[in-house]
Image (cartoon, rainbow over all chains, first blue to last red):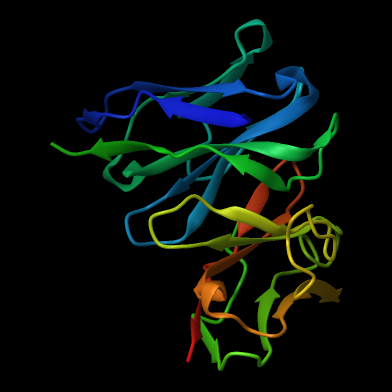
Length: 122
Length: 110
């Protein structure tokens, strides 16, 4: 079965750090770019970050640039999101997602995890 | 990085067609043919319905179609069915290895 499974979500105080993980299975993990997308409670989708198949190229939304860092370990079929200086507005369900196209990718997300909840609150 | 603009809601009766617009700028939709559409049912993860403006992934019914003109992309659902009631989001490559989403459109089947 083709799957992405996120973990690491938690309740954390403002200003603290948290690291999310996403493990993929059922597909050739290092063939595809991967992404983090978040959804605030009852709100729409917001793209957070992306990383190329080999980790050489990354991108970030302005809202998280300088605070979040995306990485991957293809040997472990794992994607990560290191989040620091967390703010109240970072509270959301965080999804990892896979690009639908090999290699360079086409920024279309054909496989999504179930999401992991991050709550930033004092 | 402003969000793409979608109407908050759209509706139609079973069998009818509904079209959702997604308006961006010359830096995103107008520049790239990397527009995607997603369907999200309540409490579920999003599902890819259209990629690269008008391509359908395997398994997506041909009732779903996409198009683009200038800075505006559109998703049309023909022959509306009860199970099409969901939230729909557009997205586009926005340069600098970034992606932006639309605010979402709630489709109601009357």
